[in-house]
Amino acid sequence: MDSATAADYAAGVLDDVASPEYSQWRIVYDVMNGRVYWRTRENMETRWFKPAAFDYSPATPVKIYDMNAPGGGDVTAAFVDYTYEANRALVDASFAGTEFLKDVPEETREALARYPETFGPAEEK
Image 1 (cartoon, rainbow, N blue to C red):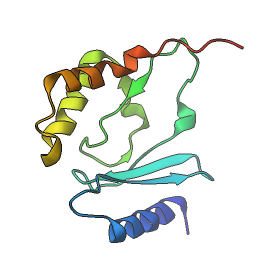
Image 2: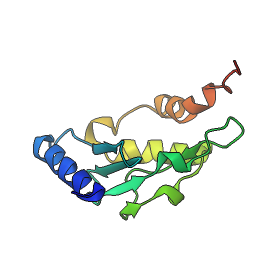
Image 3: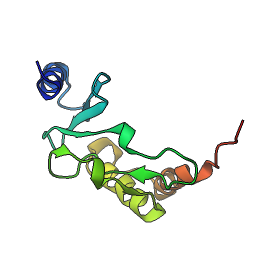
Image 4: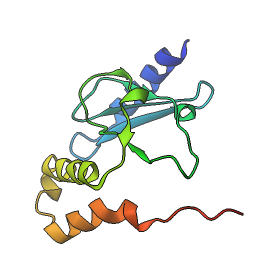
């Protein structure tokens, strides 16, 4: 069985046990081939990325990606540099698409959107 077929099989098992009301994502980690596969309730196409493709040095901008974005397949190149505006759009879209989160107060949304900015650079050891 190849990597994509194994990931599809694992995602199918997750589909079988998912709660239609509460399950948001199905994530499969393919450690042997260095890929992360997922599907979301909003987009059931299988997408994947290669964590090894990213530069994890402190000087490199943090990358983000909308897990619900349309399309499928390799989305490694679709990750973009983090900005507050991009993260706020993701936070707002997440709340808008979830019935029990739609009434989350503005100050909570703002705090969540700004949360990544509360981390400083890692100290060298």
